[in-house]
Length: 435
Image (cartoon, rainbow, N blue to C red; front, side, top):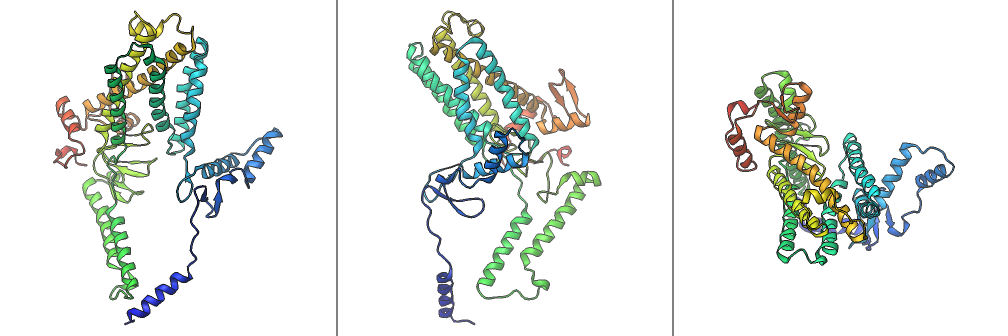
């Protein structure tokens, strides 16, 4: 046994030998190479950027690998001052903050410019979506675009519509409450959608923690060949039991292969899927939503539907108030397509352009909301719909708008009752729902 006094002296000696790291100021940070750097050196020591600029000036093609290295360097150096070191800023947040106001103000100069810009914006958004989806990358672009669009539309409403005197305090209060309810629902929708954790990995981490504690006390594990600890043995046994249980539940080798997730090392329950973008399995996964930068699953599906419904109501109400202000004595639908004299002054033109931008976003979200309502009524998820279309196992109705797999459909009322109880205490599912 080692005396406690000697142990304390050894600890003090080790602490004295360790070099103390100097605290970072608000503009300093540790870069991706592990070196101390400063925000003022943003454009310094970047050979890839120098090479890319040189090839661009001499009209030579830039290699894709060089472009990727340049973007990695920029994303690593793009930071904001913060206490105890500069914080990294995700580069995908910035484009909507800069481009959206510019595009909308350019579109308000002339009717034809408005048509071109408002047509190109959805095309560019879809192109960026497919680009990131093909690369299986998570991006904050759409979340930033959605939140900034809400804030910017509300700012234009306060600056250009409210001063005209047609909007009362009650109407403004209702619109403001709707905006805050949207943010609350989005906050709830961004929470855990129902991630499946591997109990074997948790048990392994617990076993490694116990091993560190034992070695810290100067003890050794005895009676176990190879120096293994009980935690690692139990985790290995648990993993084998999981694989065995998947085969018992599946009943066929092909089904066992589908139930077992090789990435997460766990048995997926019925209707759970592995998200390629998030890199984890989700209970009753519906889809990966870029607007919340996360999955929609068992625990946040209700909040997602609530956020969509509140957004649609608030957006339609705001569009109605705005058109009633700038195009008086006309119905909302007529004023949206025919509002003479709206481009006579810049304020009305900007407001009308923002109305059309909001209408385009509302129409897209309305389509998503309609698909979600249909899927809930037939008790299918978007992931199951896509799989049924690929395997040609689903029944298509209304030109493919409705896809009924027939596997979990229990009738309209029972389907909505099951959806209303998602995320609560686990209940007994019907025998045919168990895979």
